[in-house]
Length: 127
Image (cartoon, rainbow, N blue to C red; front, side):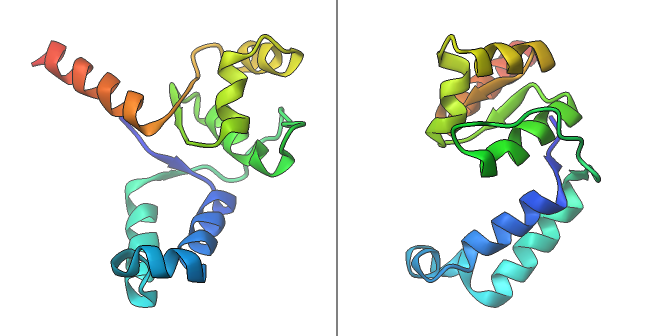
């Protein structure tokens, strides 16, 4: 299993974990020094794709297109999210969902819980 990031995604993660509401909710992670370490470790662990081609534009929430385009560029099997605009792409039979399936047929957009369950089951089968 590999983690893929783009500079745009790293910038959003950094923005989110430094927002006052997140700092209050997750003080250990969002402490300024811890945030710097966290971002640095993410960069070390991830495969950075730059530039990310832009074959897909999410009409419902254009700012989330960066995640889909990164997943397409990485030929990712999973995009893990809680964002409903992204999750709906795999549930709905819409022109946008069909466009995404044509661009990246193996991509599954899943919530964290089902993702962890899938990885656990795969690990158990391969043990």
